[in-house]
Length: 173
Image (cartoon, rainbow, N blue to C red; front, top):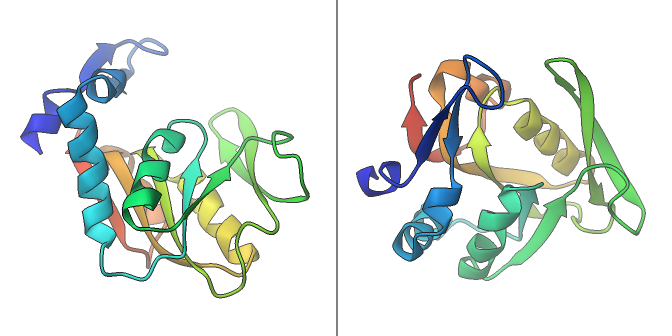
């Protein structure tokens, strides 16, 4: 995974002073890096029955469809509110200053379907936990959660206990 780590650009003081931003655009533009990222995320879940892969808006949309393709299953977008045209289930979650929500079409996941959740980054875990609740509210079973990057120091996986959490890269600060 050191090959991938070298492709992540670290941007200090973005989006505000004191924050170190891990920019995946430099990884995405590298054909080998992109292929390795998708392959490694998918390979972790090969052999596990997965019926749907949910990608979290927006950067989860980059990784989730090719992972779904590799796992020979469908892709379901978890979108910001009012972006989906058909009836949708909604889950609200807390942010540092307020709250946000994500939605999934009510008919996108059926009772008993096994769902893999994919996103680019696991930070505080609030978004991931909201999508877990959303999938479960639709009757789905969460098989696991996969991320390109995990910021271990923010302890996001503590908000999604009892789930298989797999991250390609870990940052301790």
